[in-house]
Amino acid sequence: MQVVREQIMRALTLKPNSLDQFKSRLQNLSYTEILKIRQSERMNQEDFQSRPILELREKIQPEIMELIKQQRLNRLCDGTCFRKISSRRRQDKFWYCRLSPNHKVLHYGDLEESPQGEVPHDSLQDKLPVADIKAVITGKDCPHMKEKGALKQNKEVLELAFSVLYESDEYLNFIAPDKHEYCVWTDGLNALLGKEMTSDYTKSDMDTLLSMEMKLRLLDLENIQIPEAPPPIPKEPSNYDFVYDCN
Image (cartoon, rainbow, N blue to C red; front, side, top):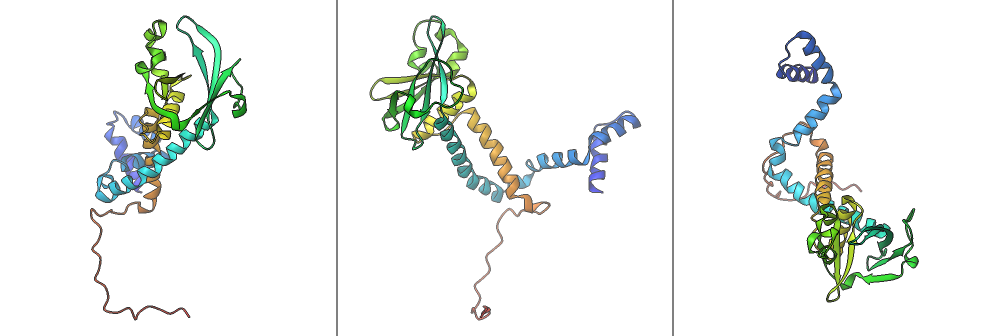
């Protein structure tokens, strides 16, 4: 009955001009659709701005961030094929980079052609210890983006460029194949250095996973009023003789 009432009220809110239009809007507001609307609205209710809910969000956030971090590092361990681009023309030359399973070394090397799957560590000639990495540089601050030529004018390439600074002034320069890989690698490298992951991809993942986890945690509290403050702790009893001995 509550769902039927809500269907009618929501259909009338749209101000139908005829009975046929009213019936048509009722059909669009199915039971499943009403549940979806309720669920989305529930996240914006005052209950979700109360202190206990905000404290729960703060408690869950580090767990979600650790999960995202592990996913990024696992992706770096799988590795990615990067295309080499010169300032004069695009060349069909490739190189591959991947993180070792113990997260201590970056293995990389040139390839003749784009690989069909993962490239094993022993086939990559060069190594860079993670301990030697000083910083991760992105965009126009990258040394290969400061060179004269077409790359400097190409905004798309500029948004996919990042570099790893190691030793004093040595760089390992990357141009990601797409925005997704750019976010994965910059997040993963920052995570290795103990820095914050700040990409749009991380923010999107955090919002999605946090929303899902909050809904799961609050599933048993459906239609229950959440108090603004916890109930007072009662005084201790005068004795504990009421404890039952199972033996």
